[in-house]
Image (cartoon, rainbow, N blue to C red; front, side):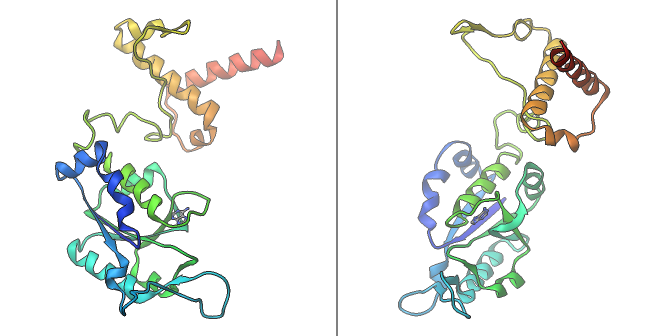
Length: 248
Ligand code: ADE
């Protein structure tokens, strides 16, 4: 998967790209990440990438010509890439979007700054994505977040092949609780079942843990989930327990 990032701050990305799973994914050619300086596509001595808005008002707008030049160069390197404008007005980014994007050959991110980009740039993009309902100073952190979430879904990017499958949001459930050594920490012991070696019982305990966490922390996720019989049973039992607590 080829990522191109169109930005006026290409150096922001260096540290992030040289650590952990992302660094390993680059080294093993699972991904390539190419930050491109939009200024390199601006004309004139000062290589200006923004200008005042027509009609007046506060703030500056990113000029269309440097962005168009950078998009064209990025597209020539990865013709099949999807061109994504990062902005708070875009489609909300979720695990399902990460999964969809992970199927593509490449992604070209346009990191907006200032008040936004010239409207005519919308003709050149495939879609607009937002990482949440808040306003950042620019799209760069959003590009990093999407690169991170997409990369870890690519085959071989994580050590264990199944580790990306059994985790939060994959099936509208949050991930179950985890424990590691020591067996007792500050008086709290690891649940016996996890030490039992009984794989069926452990799988059942984990399903229950996932369901209860989702119910307590993100009940909205359960609206979209198709519940199986065992899942319904577990939720039913917990609902009865809560009802008892309320009525006793
Ligand atoms: N640029 C500024 N705010 C943003 C957001 N919430 N998501 C993506 N890009 C942005």
